Length: 169
Image (tube, rainbow, N blue to C red):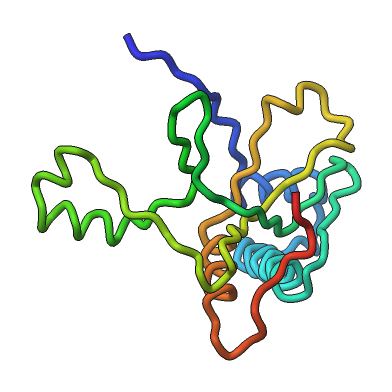
């Protein structure tokens, strides 16, 4: 029997709307469509501020900070073993595997060169050091697909200045 390694504790817009209706039960309650539009616009504004303005989004009640982090990735040897943490280019890897069965059998991976960012890899990071949440090491932040794709589009946009996150760890 396979072990389950993580618990699903996700909440979505539907859950937030139910809580809103329960807490503010009166005649002036807004419709679900309006509520969804407000949350969508708010989240899009946060994404824009974090990516375009390089601001840190701080959630005071939780003590969490969301920002863009960059780090330099390069292959290295550890105890005689090659450790390569450069992100995998899955599109080119799958193309290679479709053309060459030997490469697929050997599981050869094609990596991103990141020459346009001088070898830096950017990611959306949630800092929880200042958080007062108990057992915070058990919590994981996973940015939405839209957030990740917006960051990727901004990094690759030739019309704007080169993307440079200010935090380097």
